Length: 263
Image: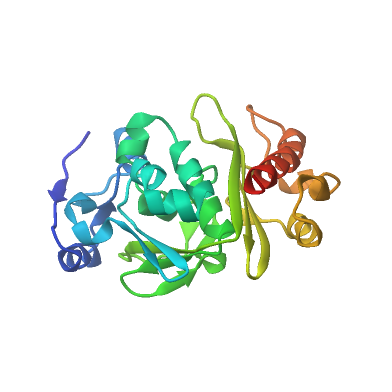
């Protein structure tokens, strides 16, 4: 490691002041600390958000489920309101990484990092959630902008994510066995605006698939999507799976997610 300063604010106001000065926010540290150890990132000043109680917690607000940015994965998985209103989101959280990662990693940290194979971005986009920051509110469709890239501005902090409660929702992940990230992950949701399908693990970031959504709008069943064409030329291939195999998995995981959503 190398020398750096560490601030541990107790209030959101203090955290905003420190990050506005150019310091790097630290959430659960599951990505940032590993990157620092490998010298991929070398922030001189860190602001640990772990002590900011305002950024934790889960509540039902009308037809929305609001989850604080510093809420850890295991708390999302275990929370009674999440399990009741969006069980697919609880199951997603319970399948992230291992016990250590679920105990330390946070929803806000994962969404802000926007790893192309992370699970939470698919839930945020699939449910049409709103990312609430210390400055504004950003619709999921506008938030994710590509590989490790989001609409967040320098110093801007995610404070919570507001999930509309869907009629049905589920997540199906084909897990990369070493990293436990998604080789392909598909989140499906039946919302008042129609079906939404968000896919992670296949390219430069999470994305929606219009063909799958159109098929599910006609019939929200696994059979409805089995013949939908997935363009492998828009999918990434690597040593873990070819583009063609990932394209095939999108169909398979979408069917699995719809089957789960339908109970």
